[in-house]
Image 1 (cartoon, rainbow, N blue to C red):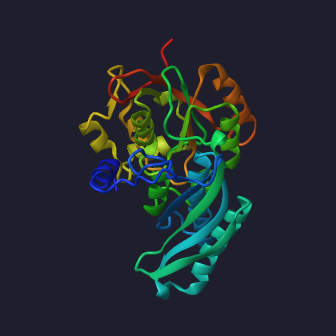
Image 2: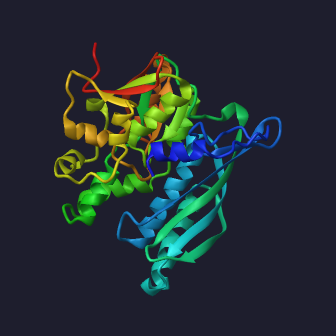
Length: 332
């Protein structure tokens, strides 16, 4: 579901007014935050989707890493996870076993435990997790708080939607997307810790709304605007080629342009590069707004360790109306 449709549905639902609930369904947070005591909160999230790769074990790993990412985006520590499974029984239980084993191994890599789950029969397989973690309030990072002057850091390349769509269509082979699969399997735990140590203003992860869509949600939450330097955004190998070949899955681009949430700079940006800015990501990277004086230090630490492809890809601006502008490159 696109962000606009989701926003309209949520706007018609009642808002919880429990003081202990620190998050809201209306502010775009990656996970719910519920206060346990003076300085500790529970962070909870849920995510599941159909297979994006053929290998069931790898799919389980990707789905688990994707669900855990919401916990890391808020700088929380995952504690427990529960499986969510929809599965066609005629496929064979050995396939489901491999999916669940992939999820189990990834959850344990995260230092959490799998505590159970729920299954239903469905024509199309789907898998994911409900995850619970905790965070000290002083360490909590949210989607709100980006300030004018902040620089934007992205920790993983984009293009997973383009490349997995191309794989399904036979336009690329498994070896062509090895780096994409490795990235989708990689946890965002260590990059989150690095960014949090540099006192990020705001942080989220890039998933189904694409880079431009999730950046707009961050700007909306903080009452600011942003400029993406599209030429600085790291792309997976052949992602731009696949965009030009028509491999783009359904995105939120039309909705964002129609509602003037996103615009393209008059200086001219390659249309297929713009397509990449909206590519829906599976288990994508973290997107953080950081103070300009610490941005280079944070980037150097990321590149030297957990996120070698990390890049500074834009800036936060002052604006009366939240908006994202896609420019070709940084000026000055």
